[in-house]
Length: 287
Image (cartoon, rainbow, N blue to C red):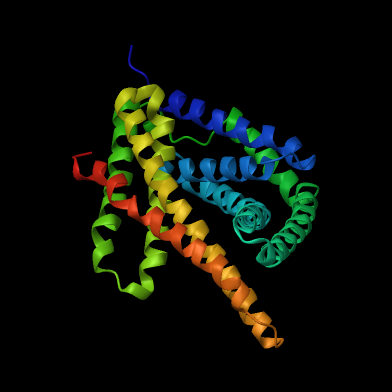
């Protein structure tokens, strides 16, 4: 029996919505990784709505995606501080005893930032804007604004077309990367990461319909996303360390204790990029 796109997309959205809404009480209780879980669920839902946007009435979906961007942004401030605190704690443990103080100072700063950011998250979750968004999300799960013609189309055709488009967009970015000026390369790699994430989420949404091929595509995109995510985390940690070293120098303090931390993150960034060519190999094949 032919599967139509409407029920298949509704099922995919329901799964993503359940991830998002079930993470909310965990975030309120400040459980470990709860902010990360809610942020990923928010981004995932927004990404799926973008990839499959032609199947929906655009105005309603675009407004919803804007609100999901707002929520992801608030969660992101807390999550980024949490990631940096974890990275700096690991770095501090690797340093000689006399140099650990600088590393733990960075950890303390990021943990304080996380605490402030988490309070902002709670204020947002208690606010009217999130309450309205939550109602819209529940309505999306129960009555998604699907376009009638595409909702009745063959799900295999709809999902395949979306995956091919996201695949080609990612491949174009990867092929352009060698020609990008050095000063723009970090941001271009970030764009590749975002495109890989979009393809991954679209493929995972399509897996119940397309089965093996979509699952393999999603796993390949996830590997690329992970490698570039590790690179991005290291680059952002380097920027934070450089900023603190500059501030120390401005106060007349010795900035050299930050050098080893910076070099460690620079090494981590290079190691991540060493795996980059391998993780793009799946893009050499036809979608």
